[in-house]
Length: 275
Length: 204
Image (cartoon, rainbow over all chains, first blue to last red; front, side):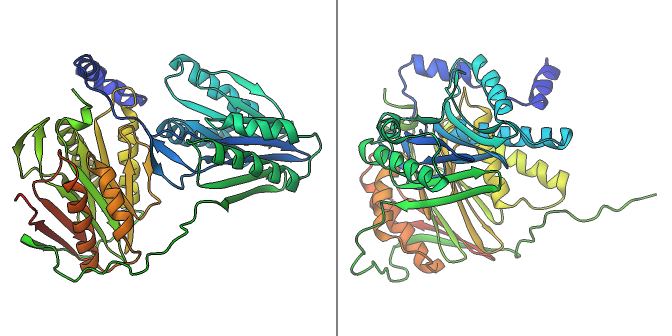
C-alpha cells in the first residue's frame, strides 16, 4: 500500500496521518492549545468608482495578543483584495493558495480575474469542509462588471452588499456603517467611513485592536495604506534602558563554531553535461 | 490532565540583533510533574545560517525536526544550493498547515541570517507564520518571557549584548514557570560564527 501513500503525498492537499493519535489524546482528557485567531474587525465599502476595505491588526491566541501588527488585507489578484477574519493559519494559507491559483488562470486565459470567479472558487472549496476551514472573508474588487463587494462565511455562504463587516467586532462596525453609509460616496469619504467603522471595532471589541490598515481599489489601481491610523503607540519610554555588562550571566560551558560566510543564490551551480 | 502542550513543558525564545540573531531554550524534559532529564535539546541547527527551536510535545518536536532535516537534505541534493532562511520559514509554515486537521503539537521558532539580515518567524501549531516582530517566544513559559523581553529588549544590539539580554529574559521567565527551567542554552548566530553558551541557573 506504500504506492498509495506516495500518490496521495504527491497529489498535495491535507495530511491526515496524525488525526487518530490526536483523537485518542483528546479522549484521554488532554486539551489542545488554542490556534491563533484574528478576532478582528474588517469592513468593506463600495463607493463611486471602486471599493474600500479596512481591517484592524490584532491577532490573538486565547486571551493573549499573539501579534500586535499582523496583516489582514491579502491581495488575491491585482484588482481583487480579501480581508480575513477567523483562524489565522487558514486565512494566510487559503489566500496564498487562491492568489497562486488565480495567477495561473490569468496566465492561461490572458484575462483579468473577476470577483464572482473568486467567490465561486472559494465557496466550492469551503462547503465540503463543513466550516472546519475557519475563514470568514470580505472580498472586494473592481472588474468588467464594476466594483463589487461580497462576504463569504466559513460554511460557504456568500452575500453581496454595498457595505459589509465581519469578525468579532463586526457589530460595532456595522452600527457605524448602517448610520453613515450612502450611495455615491467619494473615495475619501469611503475611506473615512471605513476607518471610523474599524475604530468602533478596535475600541469596543477585545478581539480587535492596535492599528488600522486600508486598501482602496479603483480602475486606476490599488492604494494600500498599511497602518494608516495607529492608536497603540508606546506612550512611555524606559527612563534608563537596561544595560547588561558583558559576561554577566554565569556560564557552565561555552562553545564556538566558525563557518564560511553563506553563499545564498537563487540558482545553483551550472550542471556539467557529460557526453 | 492539562493541555497537550503542558505535558512535557519547556520554553524557547528568539531575538533579533544588529546583523545577528539569538535563540535560547531551557533544558527540562518532564512528564507532567516529574522531570525525566535536564539536558534535552530543543534548538536544532538546520544549516549553518538557520536555527530551528521547537517547543511542545517532545515526541512531536523529535518527529518535526526529523521531517525538516529530511526536507532540507533533499533540497540541498536536488537544488545543489543552500536554502534561504525565508524559504525555510515558509517551508515550516506549509508543513504545519499540511496537517491542519491532525496537527503536530509544536510551536516552532525559526531564526536565520540572510545576507546579514536577521530573519525571525514563529508559528502556532497549524502554521500561522508571524515574522514581523523583533522577538518571539514559545512554550509553557512563553508568556512570562514575553514580559521580560518587553522590558529588556533594545533594537540593534551587538552579539555580546544580545547574548546577555536573551539569557536574562529566558531565565527570568522560566523562574516563574514550574514546567520549564533546569538550565538554559543560548545560541548566538552571526555571519561567520555560532556561539553556544550553557547557562548556570538556580538548579543546574
